[in-house]
Length: 188
Image 1 (cartoon, rainbow, N blue to C red):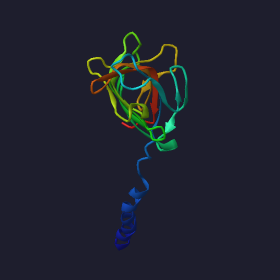
Image 2 (cartoon, rainbow, N blue to C red):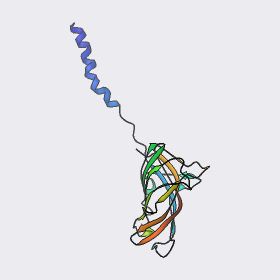
Image 3 (cartoon, rainbow, N blue to C red):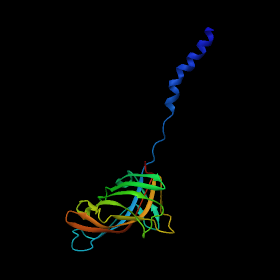
Image 4 (tube, rainbow, N blue to C red):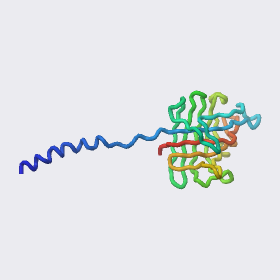
């Protein structure tokens, strides 16, 4: 009987060590890209019209998304849900001193230009003197998927077209004309 108890002691002593080799896999590093046209629709806009981009994305092609930390970029994003998705994303290009923050409370794969999802964008660049222009809640940004394209949304990723008719900074109102953004490897 004494031998039987001794046989279990070494096995029981190793049990705590068995858990050390197991851990959750590392989260994927977020990636993002955007293209937009900042527009001066009239005298109420104090910044000049200009285009901004990070990576290479358009409504019809997603050629290159930038990984967080690559080329001085900071990317952070979350795309969660099923059926309809909540999107929160931020991309900062430290080389060009631009930043975009995107919030889409609810978007589904059926979003079209005629029936878009709505949300908000905050955008700043050297051309805006670093001041963030924020979409007007009374006239929100519109987000949609171009029919026949590979655009879409699923857990952890989105590729979508957008425009923001009214971007405000103080008493100034500018606009973001048709653009595109793509984020993937986004956490939950």
